Structures are given as C-alpha cells and as structure tokens.
Image (cartoon, rainbow, N blue to C red; front, side):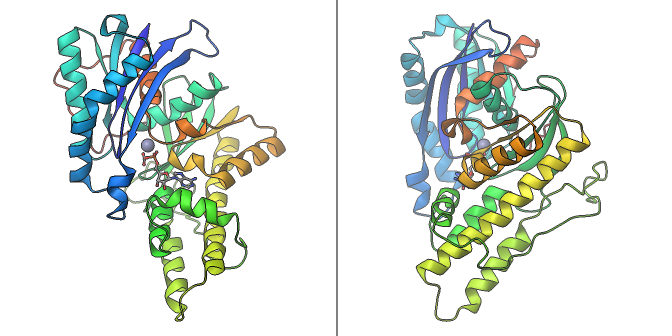
Length: 349
Ligand code: KG4
Ligand code: ZN
C-alpha cells in the first residue's frame, strides 16, 4: 500500500509518497518527498511570520502534492490513504494542510489519517534506520519542542520530560539573531562553531531539581531550560562595548553549542539508563546539528547503547515522516473523520 503524506505545520510545504515494503525490520520506503521551503520569505523578517506562512502554503500546496505524486509515479488510484499533520504548529499553516487533505479524501474516497507532528519526527528514525530496538528513549528537538519520549511499543509514546521555557532550536535561532547571523540560526551557529573555541566563554548550565507546577506528574529532573543560557549570551554581547569580533562570535557560537549539546545528550542517556532502554534516538530539526550527531554516536559507542539519527534530509520538517507515522496509525486501525480540525497545541503521550 502507498500513502500520501502532507505537512504544513510551520514554514515548509511538503508532500510525500511512502510505500509499505512488507519487510518487518524496514517497514517503509520513500517513493517521493517534495519540500517547498519558505525560508527566503521569512529570512527578511528574522523569523517565521505566521500570516505570510499560511498564505504561502495556500500558493504552494497543489503544486507540491502534484510533484510528489508525479515523482513517485503514483496516481490517486494507487493510494490507500492520506495522512496529514493535525498539530502542533501554527494554526493558519496547519489549516491549509488539514483542509487540503480533507478535500482530497472527500474527492478520492480515500481514508484520512491525522498525525501528530512529533510522532512524525520520531518516525523519521524508523524511516532511515528501520525499527528501533524497544524500549527506546527518543529526544525530539526542534524549533518548537525539546522533549524526551519513552517508546515502549511501536506507535506508543510516553512523555518523560520537556523544556520549561525555550526549545533548543528556538534558543539557537534567538542567539543567532542577537549575534547578527540571520534566520534560521541553527545551521549558521553550527557552521561558525567549527571555527571557535568552545571553552572561550563561561556559560551557565541549568539543572532542574523540582517538578514543574504545570506538570506535577513528571519528576522534572530531566526537564530542559534554555532561556537562562540565551540571556547569558545576551549579557556577554552587551558587555562588549566595542562590539564583538568575528573570532569572538565564533567563540560564542562554539561555547553556546557545547552547553546546549551536553544538556541534551546528558539527559537523554540518564533517561535511557533509568528506563532500561535498548536504544536511543534524536529527531527533529536540531538533530541536523553536527556536534549533537557526533556526541550521540560517541556516547552511544562508549555506553554500548545503539544510537539512531535520521538522515539530514529527514531531520528537518518533511512529509515522508508524516506519511510513515500515518501508515503506522492506519495499520493500527486508526483513521480520522471529516470533522478533523487543526490543533495548534496537540499533545503527544
Ligand atoms: O523540526 P524543524 O524543521 O521545525 C520545527 O518543527 O520546529 O526544526 C527547525 C529548527 C530551527 O530552530 C533550526 O534553527 C534548527 O531546527 N536547526 C538546527 C540545525 N539545523 C536546523 N539547529 C542546530 N544545528 C543545526 N545544524
Ligand atoms: Zn518539526
């Protein structure tokens, strides 16, 4: 069976066709994965402008779906279902994908599957690596989220911890902005950090010891916090009255990146030990980060814990991961009805 996936939660319009292989270990194959990025539009404003994003999704969605079907040599008749990101994300952007998917399902008579965006990111690990040894602890780290999930069975997710304030990707974007590096900030800091001294600047690491009042069911000691780090970078830059040189910017980027990456990796491995995980994974836009990728593999080897990453092209937002998560849900017998609505704050686990 083939499924069409549609993703419009933020600033990428994407459509993909994913096919079942019949193989239990590597269940899916990507036939196409078309992404129309809006980065050049938002770069001018230093970040994503929601109203511009939803308008651009409307312009792009039909062409992107047509290109995904053509590249996959697939017609509507060859499909078995349509999967779409229901949330979380920007509501105006989500609505474009959800409305398109509902219209396409009504016109074609195909079943509709609603997918959680972060379940999609987690599925990018399986798309690239095959099924993970379970239980697995997965860190989802993107522009909007930084959360640890325990995957005990395929398709089931339990939240172990999350960020109390900024997401890691958001911290990258904000620090890049204050260093004058433009949008999106993650790749820019990643590139510059390679030329900097990662011990040049003393930046704080935040450790949380108490449960969050907003989530008393979680222990809280594995929660993340990045806003103090961002403020420390801001103070450092403001204190340099003569401005910062290119070398100092590279040093700040490297020091910032060291602190973020170790906060992420440390908590991931503590959670893995606590839950007797048989594997760990990192997914979401920040999983494209070179230092995070290298440290994950290094720590995994030292701990003899199988560690997984998506390919670079599956790290950032794409519809192939949504199609794969949709297929898993469809095979578990879950479909959506025609009153499906976008949900900007949809939760997982
Ligand atoms: O998953 P994603 O494409 O969209 C969301 O769901 O948010 O993640 C985008 C985030 C942005 O904050 C971007 O700066 C960050 O991922 N990012 C990176 C890198 N590439 C993208 N952060 C650090 N290093 C990178 N190489
Ligand atoms: Zn994402």
